[in-house]
Amino acid sequence: FVDGEEAVAWIEDVDNQRFQGELPELALLDIRLPGEINGVMVGERLRKSSVLKDISIVLTTAYRLTPEDQEEAMKRSGADKWLPKPLPKFIELQAILEKVIAERRASQAKTPDNSKS
Image (cartoon, rainbow, N blue to C red; front, side, top):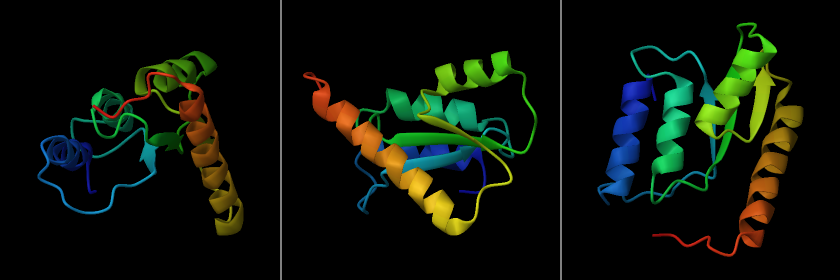
């Protein structure tokens, strides 16, 4: 997606059954996206989605945040992981993202009311 607005429009399409493709298992979101909707807001919207609420979310940024701001971004977005830029080499990044997906799956499997409504 080119900006947060496009990402949120896609989430709306998914929720309203206007998207017919395969759904992702992970969203890698930069907290500073072009436009009015930032990565934290996209994460918030994903967590409110009836279809995408269980997706793994990784937040990233090249900007230095205070620990308090980072904690707030993680909490608001419902993110599973914080990954500062520069991102690691591909093999390491792939391993990190696969671990995040596996941990979310395991967490969701333990949740008794994990229904897809």
